[in-house]
Length: 443
Ligand code: DOR
Image (cartoon, rainbow, N blue to C red; front, side, top):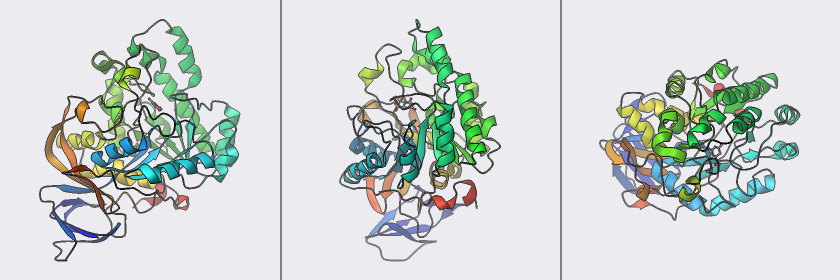
């Protein structure tokens, strides 16, 4: 099957060009101005931009074990609609992904259910370093240096030292200092207003844990990716990246802050917590300056009924995969960034951070994971239109300008005017960790 995509503005690695793109089976076969070539299907993409599929390197899709909140079928449909063609999923499912067997079981599950491409992290415990050493077919190791949803805390210094010293896969971590969080939680035990969440999981908790993880990474010369940076101050800790450190920002830490608790309550309760408007601004500036390289969602769905329990029974996390690209394209329309920067943060950079092969760019030989976006299209985010199983979005009622209108996964259309093709199956993401990550693959 071949597809010729004509007349789009194509976001290439170093320019936005008026070129046609030929897809042959699963790969990009040719990129040239005005191709006169026969293809099984010709798409006239006049007025649209063609970008690589989004790679979301932090999602929680809840399968196995927590499928009343989300599952691979719903979540991957939401991805297809949102322009996300590959996801990397976190280990806090039930059972947790803390053995090679559990990792392989998840890969098998996804092969049967996921519409888009998939990968799964292996999670650290205080006792599974041998599993972490043996693990393959994964982007890397996830450590919960602070506790969050699930029971996966690794807080002891000795265990952390061992993981950084003895393993070779890249490491990523949830960084909120457990001792600080517990002390604050005790101090505010009588407060049930959800806004207290940001004082319990405060600036200091984020700073201490990120500093600790960065220190481990530098001493052990181990590649390390800081997940969901929530404070402007943390950027200072990895500015001197020493070719080891990369970092990630999430849409909720860019576009929400503590002022939003009044309107949205526990819908915007997440870990790390929301911080101040100055933190939104500092994180955005760090993206523009290249000090944070990746945007990912931390898609963490919970049922509305669960969220509506009084704090602190309300769980932390919010869904985002189907709106993250639109949220960033809206920023392009507001003049806050360029579409090339969005493609860097959401496609190219995550592929390079994790040594993901053949993805993240529109280049001959790369996988035809592609998205057509309409920068003119204005649409409201509405709960009733969400494909995520939890059925709500914290951006309900917000109008965004700039939306994905067609998505291909390895050359097969999975989303278009007719909606999502739920019969398609994605493939396992392939990693080559010898490539050396983001800083080793600069061009
Ligand atoms: O708010 C969050 N929810 N942060 C996390 O790190 C985990 C996530 C979840 O799994 O619910």
